[in-house]
Amino acid sequence: MDTPDQTLAPDPARGSRWDAVQPWITLACRIGLAAVLVFAAVSKFPPALSVQAVEAYDLFPVEIARLIGYTLPLFELALAVLLLVGLATRYAGAVSALLMVVFIAGVVSAMARGLNIDCGCFGGGGQVAPGETKYGISIARDIAFAALGALVAVWPRSPFAIDRAIGLFR
Image (tube, rainbow, N blue to C red; front, side, top):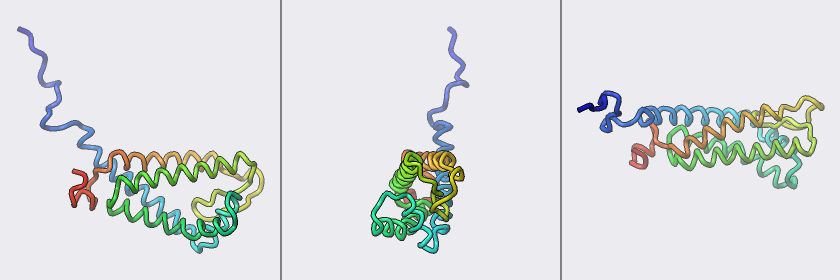
């Protein structure tokens, strides 16, 4: 009687290749996204730069734009810390991805309204000369960052995470 070659079948006791690799991919995404958020937050100091960038989008009343400008760098730092230590990892990944979607919406809105501004994502911000906008690059970059956050949200299990140490994700 012919039997299939058993060496080709995966060993269920060993788990899949994805099960072995996924935690390390998530760790890389956590660290990468945290680094981006720290860099973005630090580049917005002093907060007047962040306020200037938010006001340039012309989406909010001045008081709201200032509130966003002052608190956004702190929010980005808080998300970065959660991602670095791996605490509330799923939620930090999801909120980071959502934040990137909000940034994309802001850039698309500026582009659709014909504004000539720097996105202010990594400092700066405000008016630029016509033709000096980099909307496409900003959108593509934020889509990639949103994908990192989504990956962390969907597969939060990773080494060196407080979540794992307290038993949330094994």
